[in-house]
Image (cartoon, rainbow, N blue to C red; front, side, top):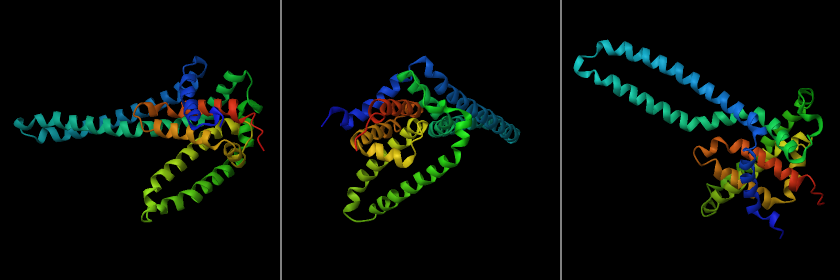
Length: 249
């Protein structure tokens, strides 16, 4: 087996994606959505702090002097709750906000690696023209997910077989993550979901390794903030180096 077909090679492409993010040319595609996310959370925290402060001001006059320390306790509880909410939702919201920038990031990475841009250059006119087909592909992707997720989910209910269900679900999740992030560079070249699956099935271990790396990285706090752009960059490099020129029948 060629080394590049080994699952560990897929892990390497996510690491390569993190290294690519160090290139200043890619920073606008990473920092802009991150800045928007920080602005959104900052605004929500400012509004929540104002509302909570008004509530505390309403309650404080009714407290006797010997219970004035409750004001500090309330603010401490508020701070802890706010920190927990931000910790568990920041990465989720960051990924949601960054999603529209991923196609542009994939285009920038490919231009950095090959000195050429995908056909059409990711123009707004091209994006609008391809929107109906893209929506149809998203429905097909959802159908593909449900086609496998439902029976795999039912395996958790079957005695003895359910022992293997977590492993099978992890492999399926890794496969779907590989397809999810490869969609950006391959989609820039007009390859739709069915064609993307055909390309990836030619080197399944490579795709599973890449998806498994993404899956594990999403479980690491703070690192998960940068997983999405790193995965897009890594998937683009995977496309350029392994899948674009792969003409295996």
